[in-house]
Amino acid sequence: MPNIAFSLNTLESLISILLALLIGFGIGYIIRVSHHEKSIKNSKAMAEKIVEDGKKEAEKLKRENVLEAKQEIFTQRKDFENDMRERRQVVLTLENKVTQREENLNNRAIHLDRREQSLSSREERLDQRKEQLEQLNSKVEEVLKEQEQKLVEISGLDKSSAQDIIMSRVKDQMADEIAIFIRDEEEQAKNQVQSKSKELLALAIQKYASETTTERTVSVVTLPNDEMKGRIIGREGRNIRTIEALTGVDLIIDDTPEAVVLSGFDPVRREVAKRALTTLVSDGRIHPGRIEEVVEKARVEVDMYIREAGEDAIFQVGIGRIHPDLVKLLGRLSFRTSYGQNVLKHSIETAFLAGKLAVEIGEDEILARRAGLLHDIGKAVDHEVEGGHVEIGVNLVSRYREPKEVIDAIASHHGDKDPESIIAILVAAADALSAARPGARSESMENYIKRLEQLETISNGITGVDKSFAIQAGREIRVIVKPDQIDDLSAFKVAREIKEQIEEKMSYPGTIKVTVIRETRATDIAK
Image (cartoon, rainbow, N blue to C red; front, side, top):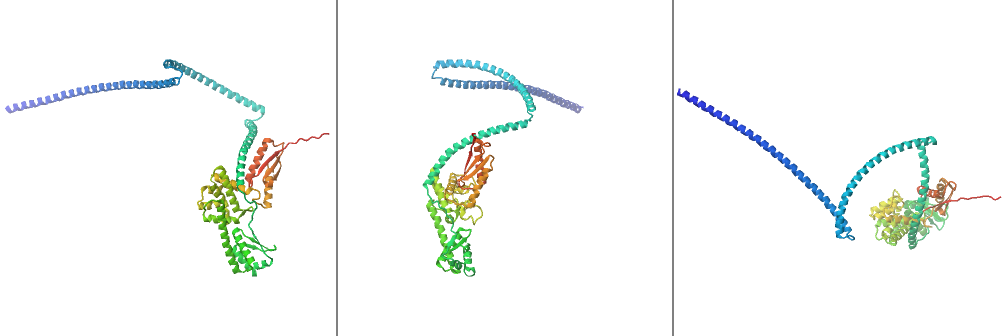
C-alpha cells in the first residue's frame, strides 16, 4: 500500500511538472509572439520614419538643387551684366551703372513676362496663319489645275508637249548666254595665258639656238664606177650574200648609176653595213674573208661611236652621271630619225628648252634637262621590243631607277596619261616646241596632203559651214560660215566644235588655229 501511494505521488508530481512546462512554453510563446509583433510594428514605424526622412531629404535636396540652379542662373546673369557694365564703363560712372543694373533687372523681368505673352500670342497667330495658308494652297492648286486644263483645251497641247516647247526656248536662250560666257572667259584666259606663255617660250628659244636643217639616215653608198657593182656581187653572188648575212641588211643593186641602196629596219645595222661597204669599195679587196674582217671592224667602230655620241650628249646637257646602258641607248638615237629630225639632236634640244623653261618658273633645271634628254629613250629599241616608245622608255628608266619626275615626263609627253609634275608639263611643251619649229621636221607629200584634206573635211562637215581652207602648211584652218544660219555667238560654238573634232580625230605636230569667218553682204542694183 505504501508503495502504491508513493507511485501515485510521483505520478502527480510528474504531471504537475509537465503541466508547468507546458504552461511555461505557452507563456513563452505568447511573450515571443507579442514581442515579434511589437518588433514588426517598431520596424514598420522605423521604415515609415526612414521613408518620411528620405522624402524630407529628397525635398531638401530638390530645394537645394533648385536654389543652386537659380544661384547659377543668377551668377551667369550677374556675370553678363558685369560684362555689359564694363563695356559701358567709358561713358558711365560707377553709381549710374549700379542704378542702371537695378533698373535693367526690373525691366528685364517685365520684358520677359511681356515677351512670354507675346510669344504665346504669336504662336497662336502662326497656327491660324498656317491653317489659312493651307487652305489658300489647296485653293491655288485647284485654280492651277483648272487653268492648266483650260490651257490644254485652248492650245491643243498636252502638258509634256508644252514642257518640251518651254524647255526648247530656255535651252536656246541659255545656249546664247553660255556662248557669251565661254567667249568672254576664253578671251580673258587667252589674254593672260598667251602673254605669259609667249614670254616664257620666247625666253627659252632666245637662250637656246640650234640648227634647223633636217637629217635622214644615209642609206645610199656611192661607187666610183658601175664596174664595182659586179665586184660587190661577186662570183655567183657570194660577196653580196656574205655582206647581207653578216650585217642583216639587204643590198639593192639596180640600174641606179654608181650607187648601192642599203635597206634594213635597224639603223645601227644599216650604219655598220654602210661603213663596211665604204671601206671595201675604197680598199678594192672584196671577198668573204675580207668582208668578215671589215664588218667586224665597222661594228666595233659603230659601238664606239654610239658610246661617244651618248657621252657627248650627256656632257652637252650637263646632267651629271647616268647609267652606262642608258648612255649607249642615247647614242643609238643618233641613228634614229623622226619625220626627218635626228632623235638624239631632238632630245638634246628638248632638254635645253625644258631646262630654260624650268629656270623661268623656278623649277629644278638639271632635273628638267634630264627628263628632256631621256623622254624619247624608248625609240632606241622600239624596233626590237614590243610596244610603243613611251611604254618602252618608262620600263627602261624604271629599271635603272631614274627619278619619278623623269618617269612621269616620259609617260605623259605624248598625252598617254595626265602629267603628275611640273617637270613633265615642261618636257611636253619643250618636245612640242622642238618638233613644231620651222624646218625641224619633214613629212612626205602624201601625208601632208592627207592632213590638209582631213582638216577641210572635218570643217565642212559642221552644220552651217559654207567653205573651209587649210592654210599655213596645215597650221591654220579658215572656215567661212553661212550668215543666215550662223550668228555671231554661234560662230564661237562652231570654232569650238571644229577644234574638238580635230583634237579627237587627227594626229599632228604643234597646234592648229581655227578661224571662223562670218560675213554679211548687202547687194542692190541701181537702174
